[in-house]
Image (cartoon, rainbow, N blue to C red; front, side, top):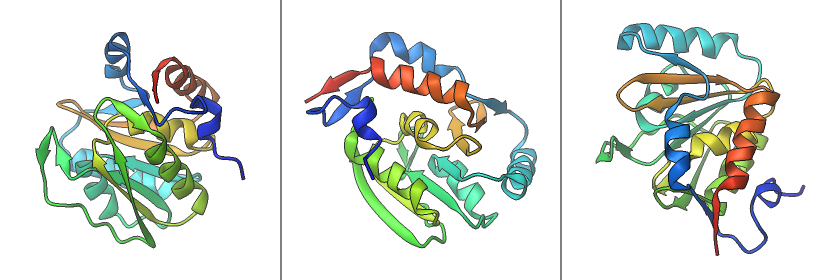
Length: 184
């Protein structure tokens, strides 16, 4: 199967770097922002985990820890061992497979992009452990998720974002990815 990275990465690019003007655009949630108390967020995520039909991709350490306690059958967790740029204890969800990759701050590396895509396609519970930073990888997860999938990520200082993946949000993710600066 052809890798989806070939669709958005120029042939020689090892990473895509966020343009400065894109930063503000990506500060807006890609989906529904949940700003409730931690207990209400947990209850909302619990309902989401039980009602979903497609794959669940969770990006971020705190939200991965919360969702992993709900024990979904099929989920991909993407973590970097940091919360708000501070080291945290490593999240260790119960999974079938652990994959490690590198991703520099402000970028989406081909390596991380492909690791997430492979994890989603596997249909298993996978923990993608990122050396570097996972912040922009929610964008890759939205692009790589099939329609009907759910991507959940933390919005620093605000809450948790739930993205119900549809063609419109996938097209937005693709347009941002295609407008990022290729790094050779």
